[in-house]
Length: 368
Image (spheres, one colour):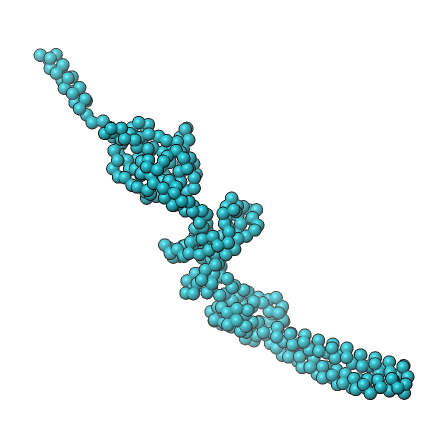
């Protein structure tokens, strides 16, 4: 009886195994359709004020007046005044010398004009007239010299005033009232942030892709999620040998002055716009001894089977990558669960997308 029972038990077990469902792997897929894709370069840059200048003294003297820190100043406004007393005295002395030289010149000119007809009529000798002419020329030269000294004295007086070439805010003061300064001493820093420029370095391999007017979006670490559109306003022509990058600038209006110099910026530079390309999440593409590949779902009757296809990848950005070859429009590519698959595995599609799927940015492409 026991043998008979054992045989019956084995038969029952075989029956259970024969009735067990086959293993199916849960996946999510994307049905490929041609879409538009933007190839974008991400760069880190910083904000700089378009107008930012440290103003220095052009004369020596004691600081007697100084703009306040944070004060708004107009273009041409005096932001620092040095003691002008010595320069003013020099101007007055130069003016007196001009007056004296002018008087000498007028006298010599009058004598020259009176003596010239007498010389023509041979009333005075050539030697006498040459003396008159020499005195006239000497007086003329002395007047020119005195006027030049007057101009120089006035410039020295003007140099006791430090003026700003543009409107802006007094950002820093490097001296205080009463300090003695010499030419070249930094006095104040004036910054105008109503318009700023974003500067960044671009890897040299993109030298052919970036030009004046290239579209850019800029985000700022201090204002998460806020992207501002702009265009490249400057492209450097020299590569920095230390990091193999060339500089670019993006000018932006900043009327509310929320963008401040030295803020960290993130630049998204459009390198190229591709039309009618097949795009998948980067994590979809796997790399093995056969190269780069994806799994495509093939329908065989009532079964869905995973088949590996070798592919060639192109541009990638934002968690997505362009597939240049190996797949066609209408193919159903596995985008979730592909790491659990082998050739010929039966799959069950739990979710299906068309055209474009959500990016899986945290799963990098193996070849990158």
